Length: 142
Image (cartoon, rainbow, N blue to C red; front, top):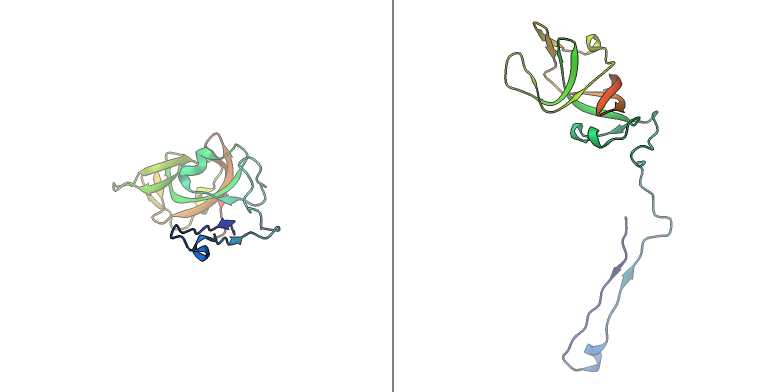
């Protein structure tokens, strides 16, 4: 986006040529493009917005989003995590968000140890924000 810029150059040396101020102005065209992202709470559910995992709390209930992270399922509780803890089996670590409605069995390369299942590579899922959780979740087209 172009921004109006004004430059003023003056000198105090005393000559008439040096006392003249020079001004250059550059302005944005009147039809400057608008932002493509709708404000929080006014997004179209048909076109999810990609957000960072830690930004889900900032989204309004009802916002359709896509988010990427490490999926961990622990005794039926599904989580999307910023990273995996270095334990075995791994645990959700960093920023962690609850996920509802995702068919975990449809996730490729799912690892398992006892009641815990996880992925070793981040996946992208889409859903709707509800109370800081991702609901109606499904795998995004990767």
